[in-house]
Length: 495
RNA sequence: UGCCUGGUAGCUCAGUGGUAGAGCAGGUGACUGUUAAUCACUUGGUCGCUGGUUCGAUCCCAGCCCGGGCAGCCA
Image 1 (spheres, chains in turn purple, brown):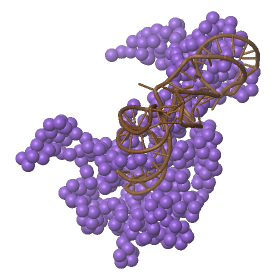
Image 2: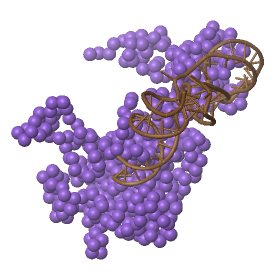
Image 3: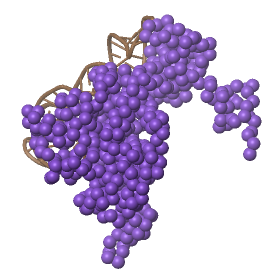
Image 4: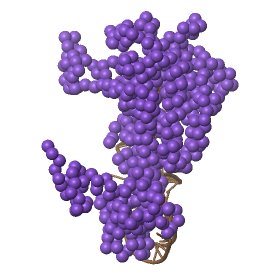
């Protein structure tokens, strides 16, 4: 089918190919609207400018009105001057906070202080009113209230900034790995592995819960379910990523992850995004190096490309933010074995709510002490007791009897705690089978995972970075519910 | 899931055993190249729900619902 020729309604003289929708050609649709960000960064006045966005606040004078227009392209708004003599001036009364408007006018140097540029309107139109019930006001909202209006909170300064940084950070994740020739792998969202040990899973089924089919024993017959077996939402793409790492060498995943734990904390969500690199021919030290380089890359990228938004966080969310980020960039992360960490904790002179003994998991208070008080810097703890870690982690060889460890690592950061968890994987078939036995896992459920060790096995390692936790660290926002567009937590799935 | 804490106007909060206030938002007016503008006036409430104690409960008690924090689980 050939492209139709059509008139563009934005410019009647324009006869163009590829009309966009039925109204405007691509050129006139995209070119005619100037984003606020571009207008604010302008180096010269402009005789004609066209803007569209939402009213943040309006200040009326006798002979004219000021409107602060924001379109989400950046934190700052652009001041619009509408003279009372304009034919459109009657529209101004309808342009309350939250209304969508469009303006044709001139970009001129501002006569007032506080901004370089402003727009003198020649044509002003209210597209959609927002009446007095519009919940977002010019000041004084708590994060808890804004969570209840997640459909409107992106229009606030804070959440606009958070989600611009989130978008940029997602882009930076791909840039980092693509520049290193890592291959992006889409691991499945629906999985049948129900014993990965990473926590409770959400069930996926099309069976009628009221009258499920039964087998001869009177139990629910999962063979009749959609996939012919029990299925769940994934808690990790790691095992599948290992498949691709043992073929394409360096891979990463970046996708949603689901955990059905009944967690009520500021750093847990039921649905979150995780980045999981998996690297063939890599040991634990290489894994720790990669994790540190990755975290620093993301921080540096945000400080370079989201400077205005980070300044906003530094001003209104966490005054220490910028100094902390710069400090983290400049210093090598500390590294500390689990055994050394236990010694540090026991020699700290602190009274712990949970006493520290070799073999126990480090508690939140211990992790916070290490990163916030002892090292005062991000710290990677490695070589954990075998019994408290997952079956697939590589057994260390030079262990003291009774103190067997695996090549695991956790990256702890001040204020959040664990942001990365990873390990060198057990690539030796017999040791892996022993690990599965230790964790009471059935080999038949992992036949393909074991095959990777039967055919051309290689040392390999990887980790998982919690994307939201990274965002919390970079923005200073203290609750995970406020760095994800629509938070899913126990009891909450609105929007 | 355990422990702690909160629920009063659209929002942020104060308050009292005798059915309630402030600031902001909204409305009206004034004023001003304004910047979360300012000033004056003004509309606005089943005090989370249910039950109990009491002459009387928003306040005291119990249960429930919802929010938040911490812990565990982890990223």
